Image (cartoon, rainbow, N blue to C red; front, side, top):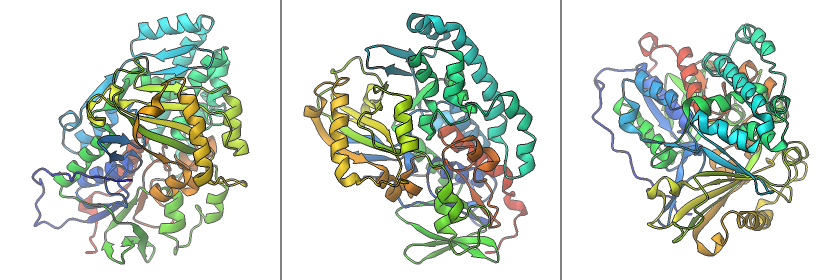
Length: 520
């Protein structure tokens, strides 16, 4: 596999280089780490962000191969406002640096019986689609939308943007959890509103995109349907990689720096306080605070392995419920621009089972013979992802993570699974395999090695009710002073909007640079 990286050319710095500022090191250049670095820069810190990959973005980075560009991870942007606020808080204008393309329809869901369901931005189009496909469930759908909005106001705008590092922070919110039936699952709530099994799936699958089992994840996460309705679904021109690069450019404008191709071996601790990091080549980088965008499981078990831990011990991490793994096949097809005209930017291809497959993945930890697939075709929207006249795809299938009593030999089983995936895809993009010009695969073992994700879990800790809010790793460490955490495994959770707001929460806990007594 060949990686290419185009270095960011920063704008003229806006800070006075002669004036000393407290230093902050951010471990990991995922969207959470980049958001944290931007916010720290706006608070007056001199920031250095360090990442083991050769480009920015973490799970949102990309691979360029034989003229094709593949976004490796997130492809859907649902709440541009969190980025607009981030840019504004840093003194910049988001729209000048990043270009978004609104999608409509947002995505299409297909079932094996030949039926389909499209999700639209316009309310009239959406209502017409529901009345056409699921007329008996229309009234229940209207009630479901109102349920989603109430949970959005409480869970996203309220709970998700507040620190939850103190037990009292949670206790204050208990009446809201009770009122909104947070004990009910996403699937359970959808099932209480609509009767058609296909529609229940269409209204409940969203937790899979943040690593959760719809049968188990708290119904608070039905708020995602409101996010789509209120803010739309967008594609970043140039891919999420372009968004990450734009964030890196802001960091450099603020006087910060980016160090790639460097692995952080350890977070240095001096008398109970984070004092910098040690790199795998032996070098040390001193700082006044440290922010970890690495998975909290990796942070607590590996990066501060020499420090005593009272809460996130190795034993507790091993008992935790982790998100599922992913098998993702990336491929570019030559000369297929005018093929498969009915296949849009986002397509969800359902297998013969829904709840049964979820049970295999999350409960039994079995690699099933059948599968459901998310098919991403960005070349519908972005001509830069493939050579002229060609297509870029990725096909994603949820699979068990590596925490199982019957380990999967992905080097061997992956070949078999890929053939099964090929057979399923042939019904949607017939003959595609004969046109493939370049390809590669990521499986749970790759998520472990590339992203340092415990158990190859693609989205860190599963967002069950007792692994959310105060029960989730906090944005400020309970173990070590001056250590902060951001990203999918922390509060408020996975998904691009939540990852970005994790840095917003962190910024409320970090002192302004003017109040920091510098050590260096």
